[in-house]
Image (cartoon, rainbow, N blue to C red):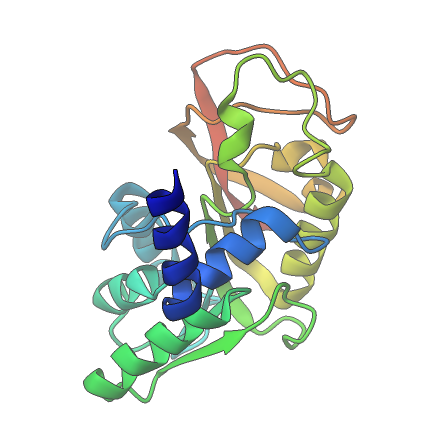
Length: 232
């Protein structure tokens, strides 16, 4: 026990990215969602290919496209999106300062002037109507809610915070833009904002779902709405 505690204290003292994750996990600043850094390159190829085809066929899409990765972790999603959208301007934002430091180090090695990163817990600092697509992949969730005995979620996540987050995503999207929300613990179509969108893609998701009252919904193990187009 003493050895384990000593190793933990040593890692907290010397490993800043780990320290930032622990801070997010235990302190849970208001409106923060997923505290951990689970990520890998090209994690959602089906969604990325769908968005690529949809935006290429959209006459309203600007050139170059402007894309946002919300909760970009250590940058794998942003650098993956570059392969799908070689001419786009892509921005990644994340609440974890250690993640953003890693992203910027990787970006300096690549020298891609069309990519940028910023530390932020929300999109409130982003311009209105500027994005062609916003990707929010496995971010609006918490791993602790996988416990099947939990009947409520508001000790870890609150639907009100989810609703506020997606409402601001909508503000940042242009008309016709795409909003991708994958593996969330809440359903976008339960929000007031969903009235301004149509569902264009469903996916298989095993993330437990909670309603607008923060109560657990029955398990379905079926497809859920994941990509939405802004109508107005």
